[in-house]
Image (tube, rainbow, N blue to C red; front, top):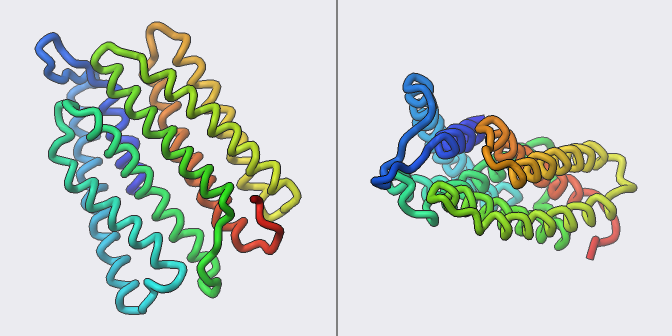
Length: 252
C-alpha cells in the first residue's frame, strides 16, 4: 500500500505540473491538495525505508537469503536505495532520466513487495522457477512503463514523439501477455490472475488510445491510465509466482 501511495502521489504531482516560459514547474493542483500529496509521499517513502530495513534484518537473522525470500528482499532494498539517491534530483523535473528512474524504481519496489506477499502464502515452498516467457513478459512490461514515463517527461516540454515508442511497446506487451494467457488457459488456479490481467490490459489500452487521440488530455484520464500499470504489474507478479509452482510443461 505504501508503494502504491508513492507511485500514485508522484504520478499525480507530475501529471498536474506544467513548465512555465522560464522553465520553472507550475502545479495546477490546489495548494492544499499539493501539500497533502507531497506529505503523503514523504511519509510513505519513510515507511517503505523502515519496512525494507526490517525485511533485510529478518532475512539475515533467519538466513533466508538462499531461499525464495532472498531475491525479492534484495530487489526491494535495491529499489529503495536507488529511489532515495535520485529523490533530491526530482524537483523541477529537469532530467527525463530521473523521471524514468523514479517510475521504474517505484514499480520495481511495488512488485518486490508483492513478490514477498505471494511467497508468504506458501512459506514451505522452495524458490520458484519462473518460465522464460513470463520473465520476458515482465521485462517488456517494465520497458513499456519506462517509455510511458519518458513520454510523460517529454510532454512537459511540449513534445510528444516518444508516445509512439510507448505505443510500440504496448503492442509487444499485448502480444506477450496474450501468449502467457494462452499457455496458462488450462490452469484453474491461474484463472483469477489471467482474468485480472485481461481486464486491466483492455482498460489500459482503451484509456491509452483515448489519450493519444485527445488534444486536451483530462488529468483524471491520464491518472487512471497511469495507475492501471501498477495493478497490472501486481497481476503479472502473481501469475509468475503461482504458475511457477504448478507442475506442467515449460512455456518455452
